[in-house]
Length: 180
Length: 159
Image (tube, rainbow over all chains, first blue to last red; front, side):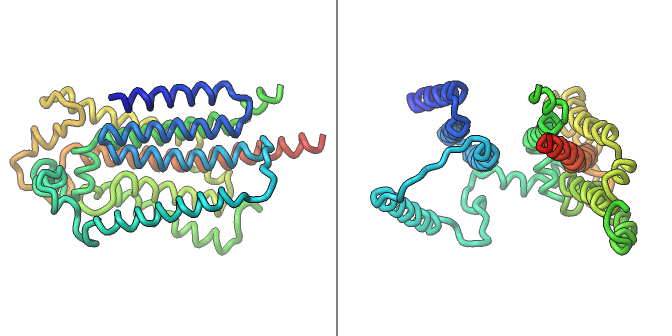
């Protein structure tokens, strides 16, 4: 449980810094740190698919936000690349590469689903009883709209919210209000 | 002259109907064949985006205006939640309970037929409405407001 408290304190401190700092770029980087902390919390809560989604969305949002802020907030880093930094980055890339090779060796063979090797996987129930329980001959639809309807509801909510956000950000009134 | 050339306009005026019908087919047969609400909604939205690209923004807006698209979007979302809440009311006492299948169609052998699978086709139609109109809305909103804001920015620069 102490891990959660440490991560929560990290997220709260990051949020306070992101609100209080004057520099836009460092505020965006703080928001990225908050997102990665949240994804670590999801990972410790044994929800790896949500953690993956969190990381992907966080990286995309970070790229978009940095792309948006870097033209307004001119922060240039000048000077030559130091030898120590280059060595550290090469070592980190090597470590990640070797860890990736280890992970790929433990993966099952291509074309064999994971649930054939795990006896208690939930997918076995979906595949064997999905037809009788939902009556839909397309198993993917029966999983999306019946067994996991909450997932689809969440995705629909995300789409709805994104359109509201796009309309609010892009409309002309907010620009005029900003100019005044 | 708004939009692209005559060749593109002629071809797209033939093709748009086929794309729209294909999207409806994907949505309606989502519980039998690969596809479903999301894929069919994206196909329907792409037929309107084809209109928007070929004939210009005004023509596409005349076909599916911005208030109508947002009404369809909200209708799809409300229909999906209504289906889920109906499962809560009828019998099962559980959110997203497939009440049509479990209460009325349980013993019948109607797999691979169009009327089967209970609430799944209704949810598919709701999701298709929602995804199609909302994806079209995003592109319409970006094209309308992006153009206006670039004009104001230009005038500001001139001043």
